[in-house]
Length: 113
Length: 113
Image (cartoon, rainbow over all chains, first blue to last red; front, side, top):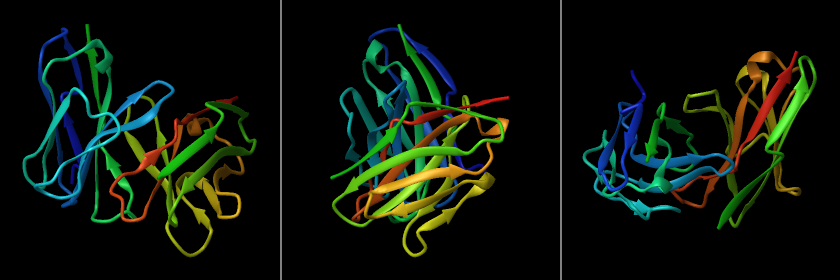
């Protein structure tokens, strides 16, 4: 049982390049989330998916797109990377409803130059 | 709407001293409250959670928190700090059928030998 896995662990992009961050969970959770973590700002929600086939914007969605490929996988795409997107990105999953805790992946450290 | 305020971005305690990390929340519905811990270069992991019932909640590694509705607080405590407790701690709130979880900005705990 691997929990939540993320790839890659590290990535350096040039401004304007695109990339996709991958996330998968093996806990049969319905909900999945993408956060970014910046110093002094805690975790900010980018997008979430309450169930397979649905996605919704979070607090900071601009510049990102997501795909809930199936129940296990939730990817985050940066179409044209900007230096402001330099951050640590975390994927999380949670069972059906709001009383349950989230399980986090190990993170992807992204630098945009 | 819901929000979380963590008082003190950095807290230092001596090894063996009491740990007190403060969290105040606002929520328009009965809240579900969580404390997560993040060790360097890792994802977040759950310390403890309050959903309903007993207001004093015990978690892993000797931590506990008390839900005080009248004070809208959910402070985290540990009677005796250990060097291994040095980490960043996040308070979070969820509720009302939302899929979203709102995180505080985090408190970095330093333990001085």
